[in-house]
Figure 1 (tube, rainbow, N blue to C red):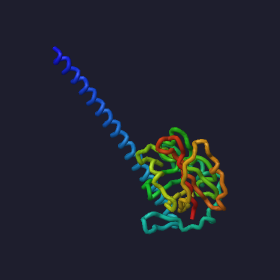
Figure 2 (cartoon, rainbow, N blue to C red):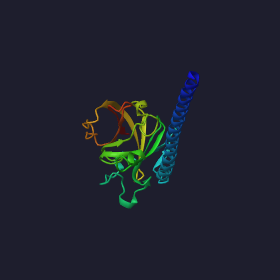
Figure 3 (cartoon, helix red, strand yellow):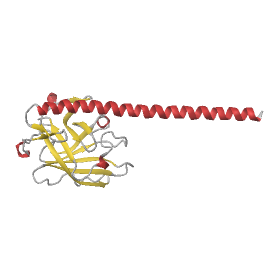
Figure 4 (spheres, rainbow, N blue to C red):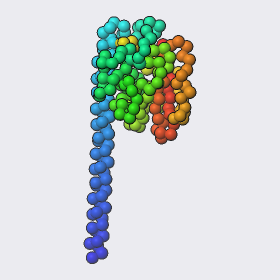
Length: 223
């Protein structure tokens, strides 16, 4: 009698463990599929987008296979939009207007930069949060989630001073940025958003730290 009850308890525990394992595998499988699908869609979008920029004749390939701009920074005309285009002229990704693209070889990311930052848009890609406008003189803040799985800005912690960022805008200007600072700060700190960039475009990449308690900030300057 006792052994029978003990056997039933073990069976129930075993079933619970199996269900839990299957649930975990299902969750991990979905997470991997979502990441893989998003990265493929984003990379395809960026490839088509930057190919259009290549076809303007204003860029060429460098030794690492990435396209760099040959147009001087001071030839970029300042616009009143974050993108260099407006309204229905903007390309879209997953239903959101796109103001440019960002490529970071050191972390192997290629994403469209969405016009708006909100809960929905940041589940689709990275977004323009604040500033002068993509590739415009002044600072532009680009925000992205840290899902701790390699998606979006999850691997920004691996970036180092001197690493390269390529940003292309909707006017097909493509600029090379070099990282010159990296630090953590509180979520409330925006003191570095509006800063003197010495008359050149700069970008600030913002994401959460792995424990979500702080913000990891990357500063880069166009060359």
